[in-house]
Length: 460
Image (cartoon, rainbow, N blue to C red):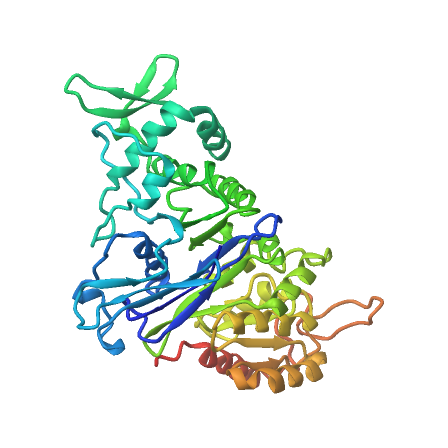
């Protein structure tokens, strides 16, 4: 098993960074490591580090070496109690050397741009041969034509096993085989109906993508690592959901790393079962890796057991993992719905990025903030109801060191609420969602302008 990988000098990694990998423990999702983060933050670079390990004497071109890291690349990988290092040769330049042990880990790497030429020659590789002979390309997006040899293998030796998983993710049976045209070229023949067929050129991008991913999953072995860059590409949300379920099932015993931009590919159950989630982002121009810890897992677990607020880490909330800095955490759903209306009434045109549909109560705000802190977010804001001034003060005391800040509303709640067991609450908005006359609009507007200004991304 691979415990961690470290990198310096490759593209944006000017400082040494390490990623700890999830280790399977028999529970669903336990072996899954998920990479999130903004575009150009370094996710694809990090997953490419895994691919370089398997390549035979890879080179790092001048444009991909980081000048702030002395123009040299170093990738460390820890596995089975050993450490292997791929690094630039001592004299510098593009060439590299591998510092033993010689038994490299087995890594099945799938890039984000996964295509093969629709017409191809004949050849067949078993899984091990394919893993140990990765295609070397200096450019992302080049056709991965060696993959067709895996299709020959699946078509001849494991078609039912392959198709069972393929169809399960697709949600329907899509029969395929390998055929040959009169010129001698081979192609994938798809049966759409009893008498309707089309060839490889007619395959949708989502189907082509799934062929690669299914091949990686259906014969996965515990001594392998599977790395998939953006598995959700060109897939309908329902297919993403079924694909994630197949990945979670596989990671009971097998390590998988995915890089994603889709909230649909985030599993809270996986995180609770010891899966890993890490955010790759830039700090002062250098790619940085931030990841959750055991305390985060406990917070995720408590939120999952909160049956009164099931939305805390629902799909909308999971989108925060892909947000820019400057998220505002509020207590509840009404705040998320009414704050945009309130800004409009205050004639504030700026946008505030709100966390999901609220934290599910004032006591949960600090938990959400802690998770975002572990994932390397900055400029995080919190807004408490006016009757939670003590909680607001505690938040500022605890999180000020991380650059986070909290405010409290100038009323007990966002709107008036009728009396119930906890008593009536006086809000900023009346029952018709109008700002009440006794509210000082200037001070209220000033507070939200402060929040907006604080939440802006600070360019380093």
